[in-house]
Length: 291
Image (cartoon, helix red, strand yellow):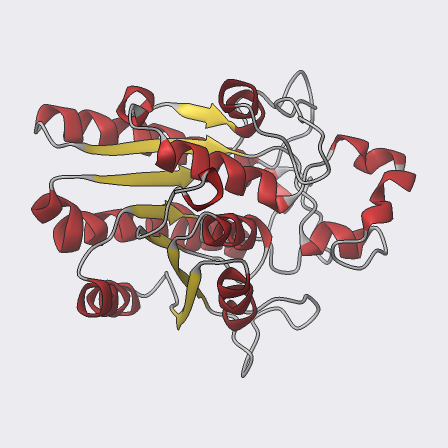
């Protein structure tokens, strides 16, 4: 088996993968030969963000075009019944699951309308609720179903929760809601790993943090088309990374037979790139992001 197909025969679930980091992760898993379940709420019939490109069908089709098998399933990860149905479908169709990347996220709705860096007393509470429900809670619900539907019986599995880089630095004006929830993801993952270890389960849970990614929303903000290779003409974007950079980190982790040594910790994509010797799609090796 070639290195480019090192995950041939494996089944992965990437939540929130119609666009952004989830899309990048799904595409690189496809390149590695995996069968990838692509979930989210944005479909060709109805997108949750009409101002941005990207649907679960788009991502699934490209996963297949890159050599994997992409399967699009509409799932609102704030609705437990949707999540249960999703896992039951994977069980029926595949009979196993090797990897779950919990990437679904909320809180970016109306980001241009409501200042994202405003102090907490000016932040809309719907943003707080969305980040917890579609982010932190969604990751826990998905992880519980991964355990009960697959990993307890299989006695193996890998859970990756996407989080935030470890140090925003100095007196940078953070979004208190965002910072609280993202750091809660890291703490939750650490606690999951302790539970798994205490119960002597060969299941690994870890957190993974990208840097500043060129998502569809970032491209739009700077007046660029998604994937525009000329982004380097904008100085502010020199420190950004593609959404596939985190995908390469996920593939490296999923291919590591000693990944359990990374359980419970937050790992930054830039550090993993040096450890596993991979680069971003433009050949650069972006270091961990710092403000």
